[in-house]
Length: 291
Image 1 (tube, rainbow, N blue to C red):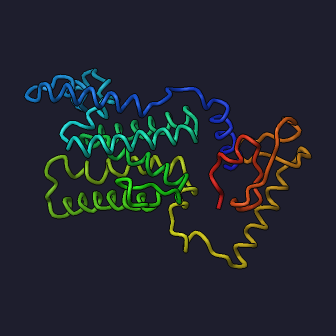
Image 2 (tube, one colour; image 1 turned 180 degrees about the vertical axis):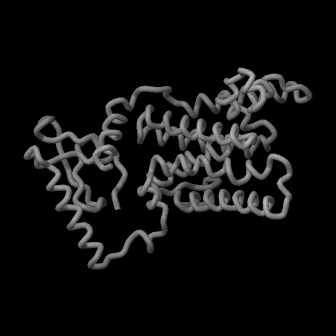
Image 3 (cartoon, helix red, strand yellow; image 1 turned 120 degrees about the vertical axis):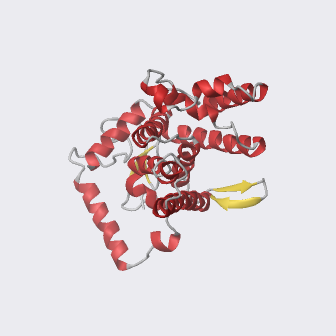
């Protein structure tokens, strides 16, 4: 599994510039144009209806609706809050793209969209782009959990705190859907939309991050300066050194390059990663800390 993960990371690194650059900005501009067309003709919003998710019409051949319904994100929302949240998601998408590369970010967004489409078709539900967008924020909060942002340019809040709020909203949606199922108050499609479609983007998030999602846990759970933790770090160091079978002293944890395969590179150890992890000059300041 570790070798497979290393190969996947190397593939994404070698092809990081492929794909659609500034994907979230393109989606945001599309949302703005659709919203303007919606305001010009609220009684009969042609473009909004043309792009909306419709299970029956999709089975009739209008497959573009599987990918265009996120463009209706602003339709039916409060304009100020809608544009504010959209701006935030554009910022989160840009940060993820800079950190991961264009290809990996495109795949992350596309897989979340496809999984949501599959769930919507199976359960005959109408999906929205809200939970897909929230998964982008979850991803960014996992990569930089202690980074602070200022709400309303005043209140400093850590990214992981907002991620907890995101998880809480998802949990509320699940509880609401289960309660509706128990008491027979599903309100039509609301049951599935409440707790199935809200979970799917979260499953996509865990697919990409796995154990790394532990970065969102509170510090008193993540860090335990006990003898066992030191033993685990010593064991990780031993395992890491044994795996270097080509007599290389330095091997980048992200891309796998060594001073033998790439003698022009410089290598450093990260003081914040467990297990004495080594990184090349391209990744020493651009990697996720292993705890």
